[in-house]
Image (cartoon, rainbow, N blue to C red; front, side):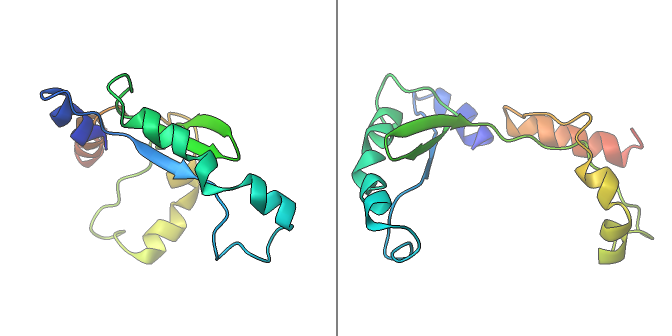
Length: 125
């Protein structure tokens, strides 16, 4: 999404995502009918319509459900680089604490930022 939004800007194309919370056949029986009624898919529609409008931002993930709307932000941890000898499921297990450590986590706004981090890690940084 971060790369697409940069590419789309050249042609005034907005790239967004919707993260809906709505009643479906899969959720029937999981919640009371009065709750499911509030989670009607139509309560997500205004968010979708805004995201495809000319006034919409680009690069947004809009969470929508039951008339409530929020912006979702994704953060990526600093993580680790595993050398050839550690590149295994066991290496992931052994470094899980570092992989999931929140210090240094960052929200990336374009795909190149994540790539730069990976190259920095490969170089030992």
